Length: 109
Image (cartoon, rainbow, N blue to C red):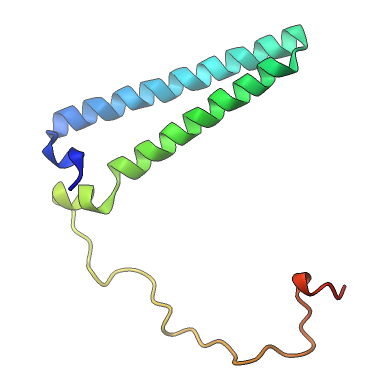
């Protein structure tokens, strides 16, 4: 059971907005680091800016996954059909690949 099931919608919205502010602040800090790296010609500041920016992307990804998880949406009243999705049952693959097909990992270029 997710910890977000016990949060009220108002508190969950406030937490989401706080995380958005944190992501924007991280991106702004990363841009300042990269600008300082360009001004001072220091590669280490550029790497630090890239690391901060990737942390912001990671936080944003976790935020999106957390707040749009299927169990979270079901808890808020949005339901998905249980059989919704893509079925791979209708795809038929050949039993054997033709000899004329050269795959990149075969090394036969």
